Image (cartoon, rainbow, N blue to C red; front, top):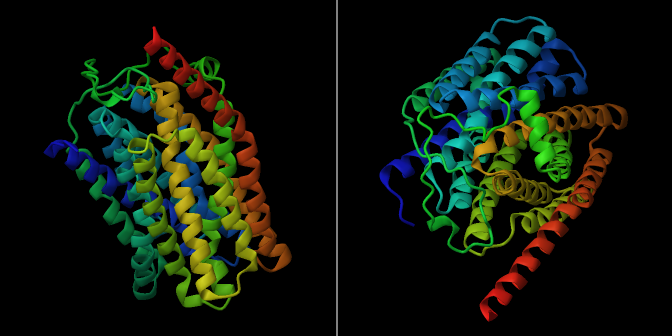
Length: 432
């Protein structure tokens, strides 16, 4: 790979930013036991509180995509880091669950949304060659946060208490502001990626956007018209987004409640480790995704469909497990498959919409993901409250992956048909 120092630094900056920002909102479940103990609420309500920051990050996607389209991502990242840190720190004060919904959920979630949605734009601004691999490496920061942060958070909670732990986490997130200040103006490729063109990465894309904001290609600057027009231009996105809803529904149930599941199964000291293993596996999945797509030239749609089926199998096995090793294997399978699914989603959106509309497409995807996040976290907690365990919940969420694979199948079939038609056309062209 021919990478210059600036490109390497950009990947490291995005990696670190996502580790601190997205990693934090994904491991909020570690505070669930403390919230249950101090505020005397049910598992469903506590699960909702712990997942609200993640959900807000997603539901604010359409709004933050407008910000990214019109404001340089340098300022978007700095503003998002400031807002997320402020929310975490002010959670030191509340004495009611309703206040936690705001300080631990909505405020950090809005900041995380501003940070998150700008990251794929930053990567695609600096890379045309091996873009899928770079997205995989950079977005491994999300998963790295999942295995780096739990031991730290557990240590902080046991040493200083959960309120002080959030205060220290907020101080760490302030570093995102400094990272955002390092970004400079960069190139803005305006073409859609042609995955059937072997030379696509070497073609010069010379258009620039001197403001650092993503160009809208004539789409209305208002967020509602722009998102509706995008769906009208690319209706197959409806199926992609619906599948993403099911994936996030199943994944959030696992990431929020896996720690508590280990506790009630008799492994109370290993709840944080299972989250760390999920994160390690997710890092592996994200890197493998880049290699499969960029090196082996496997279609992102094919990889997504196959991975959905594997994720379903991994989830169905979980209720049958009674051993520590079994829980670890199941956690690794869940982390690995979702690492692929989350990262290849951006490659698919880039292929379907092009860089010029990527922020809008990602914003819509995050909005749909929110519905899955809120549904999964609450439903898993509610099932546990009713049955006393998580076994039925994992059967339900395994079936959710299968449903997602069925919904996504027309997208996979259409892509396969398109690639077959393109290959035939190329052969005919060579004969002529």
